[in-house]
Image (cartoon, rainbow, N blue to C red; front, side, top):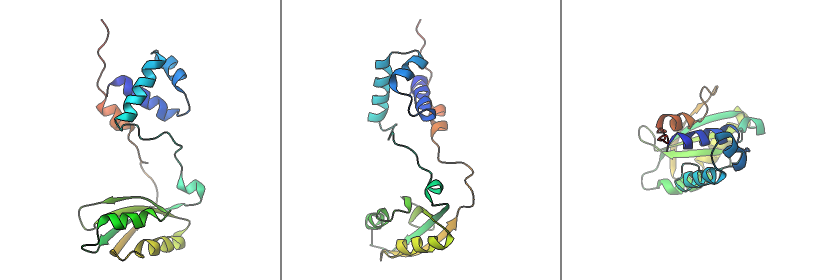
Length: 159
């Protein structure tokens, strides 16, 4: 990834509805170059989607919690992951090392509703125990653009 890729990613991150033609005009490169770069970044998995980013709080889920799950030996992470995928309030889940086996970020409508979400998570026989931590405030939201800036290599300048 070079600095043109990084600039292009940042432009579309800041203004996702800008369009290829306007991006090419602002960056001073051909429309075909912008489209080819976007296609290359998408094919490489660098760009993984173009949809809107939603805020759970704005759609009625102001409580965020992190569940550390311990999975019964032999139950398998895949079956637990399938179970979690069926619960709308589970936003993401990861297999982890350390004290637990899996980590899940969940949202709820209230602290009382969080109990319902936890009960739904724990209804899978493969999960033997969980611990929950409630988030009080977001200090740094999910981000990847600093990685783009840190890894972009300068493009060679034409002579």
